[in-house]
Length: 248
Image 1 (tube, helix red, strand yellow):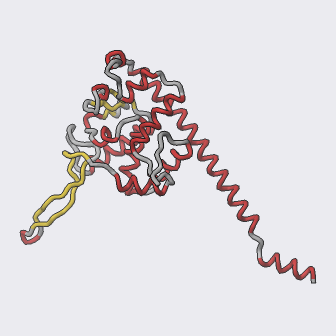
Image 2 (cartoon, helix red, strand yellow):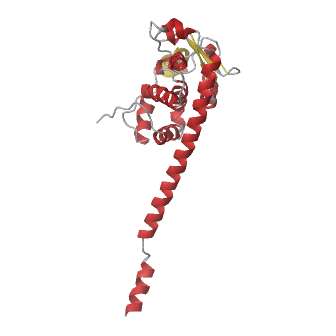
Image 3 (tube, one colour):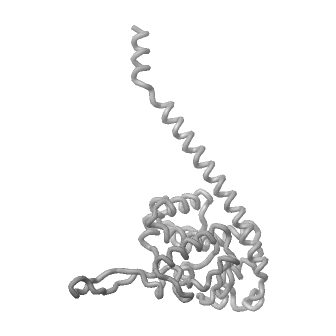
C-alpha cells in the first residue's frame, strides 16, 4: 500500500540521506535530494538547472524559469546544498558541460556513432544541452532500502516548508523562498530581503544539523541495546555443560 507522507521525522531524514549516499550509482539522486531537501526547490527546478544559474562564490542559485511567477527567485545555499551543487558541477564538467547554458544534470540520450569498418553503432551518451528526465529508478530503490517506500521527491519540499514553519521563519520569507506566491500577495512578497532569506536558511541548517546528530545518536544507542539483548539471550554451550556436570 502506498503511504502518503507530508514531512519527514529527523530519523527518517537521516535514513534517507545516509541511504542515498551509500552507493556511487545513486550519486545524482543523493545530490538532487540534498538540493530539494535543503532549499525547497521543486524537482523540476533542480532537473532544469543550468550551470549559469549557480554562483558558488556567493552560495546562491538564481532561478529565472519556474512553475509560477513567484518561482523566479534567488535561493541561498547552506553548506550541504552548496557541497551537492559543487559535486554536480564537477560531474557535469566531466560529462562535457562547459558552457553557461549547459545543464547541471545532463540527460543520457541515444546516439549513433561510426564504428570500425564504417559500421554504425547505437550507443547511449550524456548530452549537456539537454536536462535529465530524473532519477526515478534510483529514487525508488533507495527509498525502499531506507524503509520509506512511497515517499515522493515532492514530499521533500513539503518537509522543507514544515521545518521552516517549526522554527518560526516568517511566512513572507518562507513563501518568497519557496516560490509559490498567491497572486494577491505576489507584489508584496516580491521585495523580501535576500538577507532575511539567507538568515532563515542558515537557521534551519543549524537546527537540522542538531536534529540529525540527535537522531544518529539515538539510532546508535538503540543498536547497542539490541546487541546487548541478543548477547544476553545467548547461553554458551560449554556453560550449560558445566552446569549439568555440577548437578550430577
